[in-house]
Picture 1 (cartoon, helix red, strand yellow):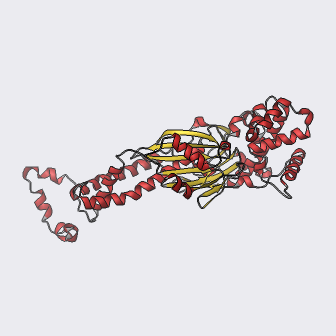
Picture 2 (picture 1 turned 45 degrees about the horizontal axis):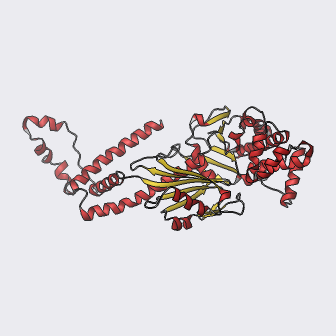
Picture 3 (picture 1 turned 90 degrees about the horizontal axis):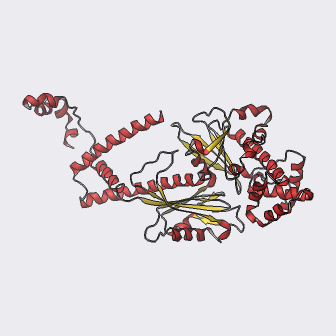
Length: 456
């Protein structure tokens, strides 16, 4: 504190440097060294912060859980996150999966039951996760969600799970928000190109995905090119029939549901929607029904859409159902693209597309329906379209979000550690702390330089 408070004696009067350099024949060596007078007096506190951070990140890693809770299956993963690991937004978060399980929702009465089983199977008795992030299929309100696509319904209550499971933070995010962040981790071998147009960096990205339901989301970039994801409920917009047979289908579904005016596009563009289309066709064309296929379909319960897809290449009704489904899927994809104009890329996600690739790649159904938008069709044809092959995007996105929560939690501990260092004087002397702060500042500066170079 003395030097900055008496600057004139160090800067204007030739006392300090004259004494410093008065070292005989080695004086030139000293004069070649840059010398700075530090004005701030908080180096000790900064150094304590840096040293505490090093201590925190040098011990064993933390545990987090990420989950993808869909309408059909729940996938949970336990991650060990090494201390000192770093993640940049829009990249795969660090960590190692130590345990993972997939659960079929129909076999369990509640999500809580699934969680207890997972923690038991993972043998989490003495050490509990710090954070848990669940990507959920449904609108989230006050960190709770009621599933719209599970028979008898499920309710997941984040605060309730924190108390019940003993996890510090349980956060629910929309399944397609997680999917959106997962898109940023894709490698070239994990998708195929449906429409080869030029991708424009920094422009919006969007996705649509049919599975148990129909999800949509979009991402926008900030000034540094880092993306944030925004979920929506686009799957619940109105379905519009496009030809005579779809008008019959439309009226049949309205009658079955008791709807006077409308129903959502998700009733058609989803796994259950594919099953609905087949049932309508089987009723309309009973002479074309294959008894073996139909019996398997009726016995499949929530997996009826899978039976249709599995038999589409060999069964006439299943093939017709699949073609109606893919055409409606393409039209809705085109509608989503019109809303977002995602010149940064439009991605087809969800489980149905990669399991029925030929209908999206070899048959000219999907893109034809997608681009059939009249005078604005050229705008859509200029957008790159990709079909994602991997089905773990939701888990990747949830993992990334859970990692961010873990970092926030760890950072909140630093203040307490620094305070203990001051009281106990066990970590380092004030001189050491000032040195650590200087080293830390150099590290931060190097990180900024490297980060800027990597971005370029």
